[in-house]
Length: 315
Image (cartoon, rainbow, N blue to C red; front, side, top):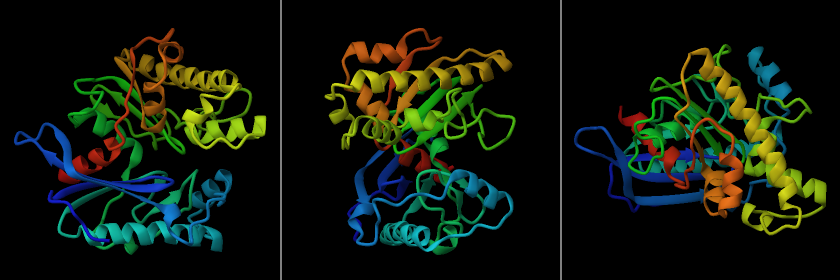
């Protein structure tokens, strides 16, 4: 795995299905980051040991084990995690002469990933990566990328909400110009923790991964992308559940801002969900923009989280 890039700063966004690498450049005044010339994606599914049908350990079990400091990794979880580690180690090794910032989903301690809703936990990930001593939160890097990159949608925003939809949801809140740490108990819950009155979590209804899963289960289909889903005769019914989850999440965030007597300036929907909605006709976009107290914009740049990770590394 040889590198073709010429830039000396790179960001790596580790998702549930792939690793995305983006080289980056920071302007002389160190106020803005922009994309460099090198971009690459590495799919976990290209590895022979990757299991596309892998089922994560139930979240209640993960939380219990994390709280007791006794994380039990079974063979299937270990094997799935090894694929991610091997791919990531190769990417890091091929760019060892660079400054590298890495973001990863899930709850982390100083050693690795201890809770992960949509993939394998890797408790000792940092010890298995050479010259990497920090894993940044993917949600923090998403909102950072939107804030400081020249392709971001939150430049000059002081109070805003970020909702990144991929396999799961990357949640971001910006209050008085500062990113809120959603791992602190008194702060709002993340989408995978926030449960609607009728049972499901916001993440399970709002994330593209959840949207496709729910649709296929209910209508006995085998749809694999949001664009394909939009052609389904049942798309409107599925979309209605998405809007319900979105409205519920925004109400929860609005209560948080009211607590601090601040108004939300902008809501940004990013990642795969943002890319999809950005391509939809106006009547679909309006479903997300109606009745809300701030403009809703759709971020369609895949490199945002990687740019945020690169920025954090450079600071």
